[in-house]
Image 1: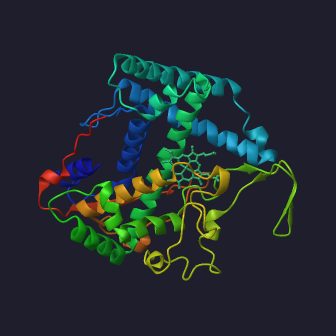
Image 2: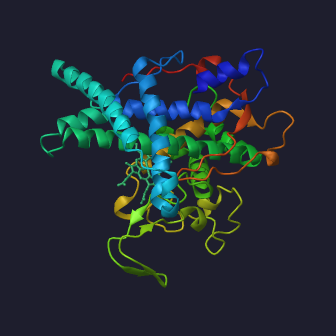
Image 3: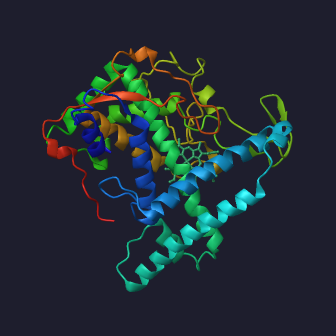
Amino acid sequence: MVESIFRDCTQSDKRGKSLTVKNYLAAVAFNNITRLAFGKRFVNSEGVIDEQGIEFKAITTNGLKLGASLATAEHIPWLRWLFPLEEEAFAKHGARRDRLTKAIMEEHTLAREKGGAKQHFVDALLTLQDKYDLSEDTIIGLLWDMITAGMDTTAISAEWAMVELIRNPRVQAKAQEELDRVIGPNRIMSETDFLSLPYLQCVAKEALRLHPPTPLMLPHKASADVKLGGYDVPKGSNVHVNVWAVARDPAHWRDPLEFRPERFLEEDVDMKGHDFRLLPFGAGRRVCPGAQLGINMVQSMLGHLLHHFEWAPPEGMKAEEIDMSENPGMVTFMTVPLMAVATPRLADVGLYKRVPVDM
Ligand code: HEM
């Protein structure tokens, strides 16, 4: 990410021009999840995507399209006629997804048989297949749960955090001051630094408070008739929890609309399901299993972006003019993707090079 932003913002014809921040974040989220799930990057160091990667991206895009029409049909029953459940399209999509995943699973099985294969998520599932009686369909389903749930959520959270940092230069400068003090100008940040970067952690948390990527969580179904806050919720109802509204409720938050990470230095509020004022990952039995991974990914993206670059709105635009509208739907990204100008702030250009990781 850092290397491609550096390349794009220092080329003579692009200097001072704005970049679409989301493109870089989406690429990081994609590479991270495919590395975790399958132990591979489908994109090489030049940013060229291979054949499997192209297929992978096409499947995720198509899955989102089908998922959106399914969700609308499910939740607005009187509009269902507008969104006929495209059974054929679903079957085709499933077959395509299964074909690709099975090919990758076979590659991993072969590598394990030859010895020396690393334990990626797919290997863990295949190794435990007999012990837990996991069918091939279950393994494919679990792998794709992780991919679909982990990719957009992290990129969207980081994009909202970046827009808030550009609208609040005081916060951006304070986070950079912390990074300069802890990391300094001669090395790059790593995950082990997070504990020494409390303000960066608060920035990520404040972004997740104001902009939870799934503002209504995922739909739940009431398994019994229940009375809740004076309302009757009949068995079988689809239930959404508006965590977006709860995290902006003036009854629970001082100046709720202000982006002020310091609030979490003043009071340590849990965000992994134990404090009902802040539930970006849900709570209870269905709480997000990738919460800590998601937090680490968002902190990592923000830490690198802020340590390496200064961020400002596009030339001629004031920060307060940035369009903050949210795209309606299950997953809330910015309707107008954030454009911003990046200016390198580290003198050692070697620190902008991608560090190859042994996978
Ligand atoms: C900032 C990042 C993330 C946010 C804000 C987020 C948020 C959520 C939320 C709100 C739910 C629904 C909880 C509920 O309905 O009670 C959920 C479910 C889920 N998340 Fe995440 N998530 C993030 C990242 C990830 C990552 C990185 C992974 C895995 C790689 C992941 C995997 C899942 C899975 C598999 C579920 C479904 C769990 C179930 O239904 O039992 N998430 N997430």
